[in-house]
Image (cartoon, rainbow, N blue to C red; front, side, top):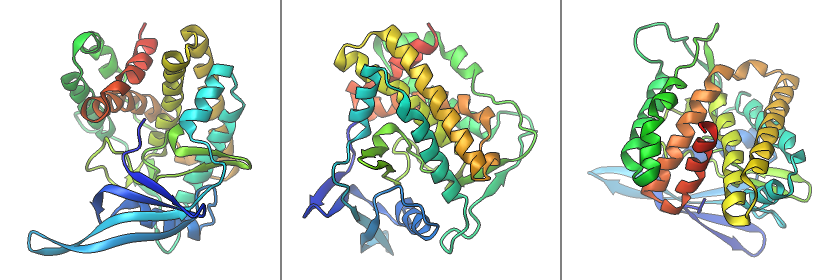
Length: 315
């Protein structure tokens, strides 16, 4: 997917990411950078500075975040490039490493710091009438995707709306769902491949979501990361002529390896309780619908990817 901001490499040493348009403060990235630095998470571009300016809005003083300055990672390869290569070749060895990276990130987010002294909250199990909060938000995404997707894709979506909605209600967990500061937009495009491993970047939150609370279930990140592998497969089919059946096999294997790596690493770090697995499927459905919303509002040519995924899920 196209980048919504503008990044400039300066002197082969730093990257200045200009936010277009500037974002009102508070913004998630500066605090997340400060937190990750203090707890020793290094699998990202080292953050150096946040550039802002004061403004007057509606008679009140405010502040806009203009840019973020991070280290330049020489030789880094964008995930929408290297992962498509893996899909075309059938390679899945990378997937467990991505799962471990996501687990390391979530464990770091759940570690107290001076920035986030209380990093883990809990959402009570839903017992009352009506849909759980997660299901209600996902249902809104389905409704919005239906309203914005036209043509044959919209007809297909309408015909399968009942199936999509049926998967939104997760079974009530035995215990309260843990909530942490998640990445919020964790897809393969946010993961750079380096000579020495991988780095996760862009902690700006999900551009398709407005009004989301800062604390979310870890399952939301995991669901977005695994569905992005499916999007990679659709890119390989459309742009590289890969066979759909072979890509389907690759995506299933890559997803399984990523989730296995994530669970193993999370348990190893003593944070196995962070993942509420009952939420993964509802979040996957919501994410595909949000991809359709993003395509309708910002990048129409992207629609083939989420539609391809949904058609493969409901043949």
